[in-house]
Image 1: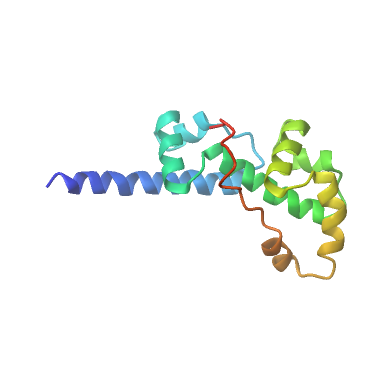
Image 2 (image 1 turned 60 degrees about the vertical axis):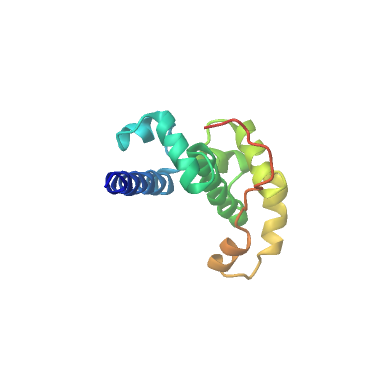
Length: 147
């Protein structure tokens, strides 16, 4: 009997976590913080962070930064924006943080990626280039401590 309310609560939490993930996907370029995301689904920031990590394997902040870096990669492949312009376009407030995170996820600094990606994806349809160059978070890397 008691498992039914627990299962119902779990489904409710998963639906709210999907709403958070969808909001991050939609609004990645906006200033988003864990408190605002949590308020949007009526959870505490700590509970949201714990539940999001349990469901998706990374914190909401890491997920947000991964979305931002994915978008930055696409903009850098186009080649018409500087690294600084890309940084601010994807919602990062600090060029240093952006460059550090980009290098962690992609394995090279954004300026190097911009140079090399233009050559590597030349003539490739954008949808294929996006799939081929998608960043994969290094699951063995030590956590950065960000939530």
